[in-house]
Length: 336
Image (cartoon, rainbow, N blue to C red; front, top):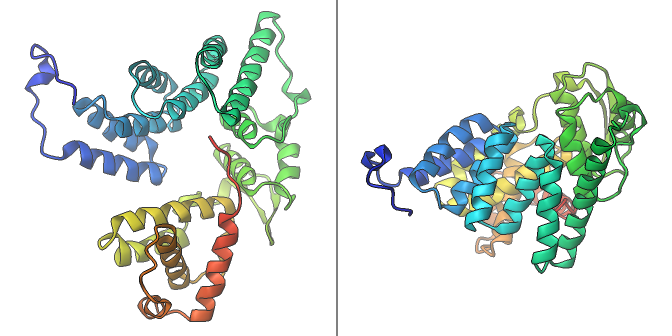
């Protein structure tokens, strides 16, 4: 922990034992619940205690970015990059996303050029940063020439690259999306499109409180929704009931296993949204995720019959549920 200047007023503060860890845990819980303002408030307190803690710093930057406090996120990211705190490329990606939101394209281009010139980048990262560099240069060129690209003439999906699509869609939260409505409508009703991108688009429509009807086809699901009226991903009764069961049965006995399971559930529910696992059987899916979590951590030391008894489910149903979750796990996600 970095020692504080003895002349600073903060040097007289007394911190309770493990306060930083408790603030971090609660802050991460709020992030998982998409309560980013609450998360940032707690994580700022944790950073006051230990400003060099990489986990605290990274979580704080994520929370600040997600609650659209981009100026503070930029300051936090620059501090971590300059002082070598945290995973360099993870922080760099967050920092560049923040610059995009702020419209700081000149600084973005400068940062990426230096990164490409000075660091040995793996091929996948090099391609990623080269595309971001091209994006930033195009924005600068348009600004220098006084050319403001008309939204009506721009295509939302100018590339098939998932990372580029995520970057582009993230900007829509702060843009007028009316010019893109028909393109979004076409994308989310095509079951051959990527479910992750479909969910992002549906979430953007909900954020803009769009009251039109949209047909959605994802996997084998079909429905018509009004984005303004749908429940956010991680606030549905089924999602919360599922976590309640697993919290009761798993978290106290094995918190590491619980966190692994929760990460899987969040990923799968995001891919399925606005649809959910079927059948709506909380115990069945709790049992399936319990087994899947054990498998991922190499902890399959319990017989299936034990899990069947604990969660009171049918063994054949459990086998089918596990097979379905395996299919969801095979879907590639953007490496952001």
